[in-house]
Structure formats: C-alpha cells, structure tokens
Length: 170
Image (tube, rainbow, N blue to C red; front, side, top):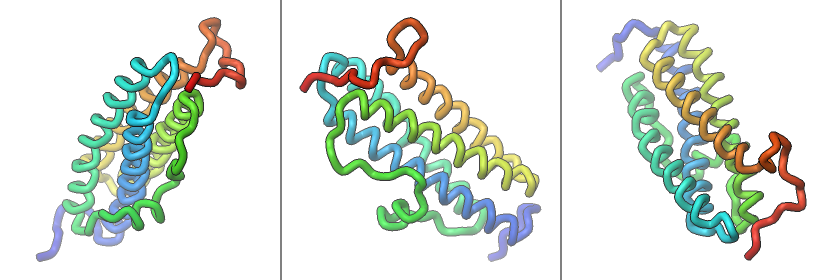
C-alpha cells in the first residue's frame, strides 16, 4: 500500500537515507560506549563506568525511534553490522585505549552524531517533515550535552585542556 503522508516519495527516500546514516552513527557510538563501559580502567573507573552506562543506555533506547521513523516513511531500516559500518562516519575501536583516549573518542563520536543529525534535520526541514525534525532536534540536544559532559572530564579544572600526557593507570 502506498504511503500518503504529504511528503513526496523522493523526499521520503532522502529523509530515510539521512536517517539511516543517523541510525548507523548512533549504533556504532552505542557499541563503542558499551565497549568502553566494559573495559575502562584507572582512577576514574567508577565515574566513567557509570557515565558510559548512562550514555549507552540512552543511546540504545534512541535507536528504535530512529528505525521506526524510517519505516514510517516507507523504507527499510538498516539492521546489520556490515551496513552500519558502511553508513557510519564513526570508526569502530578494536583495541582497549586508555580512559583518557576513550573519553576523547566518545567526545568525537557524540559530536559526529550531532553533526549527522543536523544534516538530516536540513533534509527533513526542506521536506516539511516535522516528526523527523522533532526527533532530530531531540537527538542533537542529547548528543551535544553528552559531548560537553565528556569534554569537561578532559579539562584540568582551570578551564584548560588536560595535558596530553594524562593517562589512566592500568
């Protein structure tokens, strides 16, 4: 049955494609955050372990609404690791970096997802797709806040970045 929601098929496809990139970035970031939750060590273990758990739990809960919006637009949602890796701008982490490097990678990942959402928002806005725009606005707010909170962990308390030599003890 045809999808008749007031958005042209061409626009629905463009939106679904941009949401598929958003879903892929979100999933890869979720997996990376969960990996770091499992493997973080060092003097900030407890703080990071809990923070990473809070973030990956929120990210996990955000995946379904993105995929369901793609489906509501009449397109299949990507759902394989192979497809996510192909679509994502975020690189997987195969090793176990220091806690400091984990934080840096997660800042970059949060910022990447925010940028991906912002690009998808432009596509949704141009097609007058308010439900998608609303979903993306919410995601941008969360990812920008998460990036800020993670970035704060990299500062030395005087508003300056921590020295690059700061490493978590193993």
